[in-house]
Image 1 (cartoon, rainbow, N blue to C red):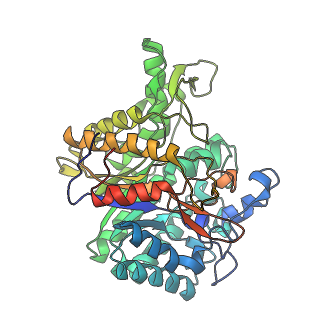
Image 2: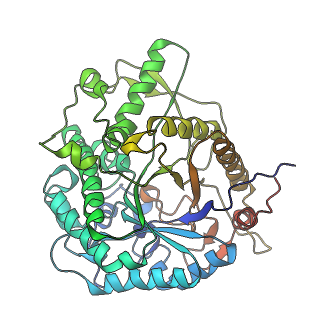
Length: 449
């Protein structure tokens, strides 16, 4: 029997995102976002499903917060829907949207739960996409306007800010591969989006520092750090190039290192950099957020436009088809701690795991329970890595499980369940899964594994 010890001040949290859980897309003065539009596109989302109702957290947030409190969570990471705050993306502010998030934050504080707010988790107002979205530099003035409103109207209630969630998904999945909204497949637009998302992060931090607010602010990346498929130099180079194109392209400019040279030299990628841009992007941050689910093996492939390809793996998989690779989390955290060392004149930058979890084929059994031991095993393995890397000197300060609730899983609709709380999407009934009780015991310090 093993018992893992975490520091007393280790922050235990759980995460969601606005479009995935809130619902009420036509209520409270909310405008339309790119996922509303994308979900109506035939074939874009499984079975034509959408986030119109989702988990109905807009109406049920008090119930959800009570369940978090019962489990002992100390922090809730949620995102603000930009079209709830400024429905058209620019201009008129929606007081009902501000009131909703103030009520949410106040209810969390009543239950002694810390508020961790993501400013952008993919629900771009559709009018801004009509102008070109993240591929158009004009989005930066709109984003600046939006974050200023959030800081002014909600800053007194927010304990931690995250600027952007997973820039890779915004640019690569949204504009290069087309798997996510707005569903475009255009490399030039994707490259512009990469730079503009980096710029938006820098602008958000720069504007935040002007407010005098004292909460920490950082960014969340979903680093892709593949291992080489073989020990060959070609595969090692391919893994490095894959990491540069999907991870370093965001991380390095933010840390003041500029864009990876290999992207220009190997892939002939040029970013639309203007004077002062790199200085804007490299605003000092207080922490790094990491979303981790799995690791893949990469191999050289000269026929690929990006000179690498992912290879098959031997590990068992989650319901998403993603490999169980807790060792990849260790490799990733050690690498991030190393490459971020000394940035902004700091010996170390604190790291938070802002998402980690897995999809399972969960069902409510005859006893009214959800026995998701596969998820418990996944979480045990990854938390063991967390405890171990802390001993190795990684400044890991907290962990947020993804997700609090089963929810709208983007292009997969409602077919993939990541929650530690089961949601019946017909009745909206919430049911604790065994993984929820596992977290309750882990947070309390009594999870003997």
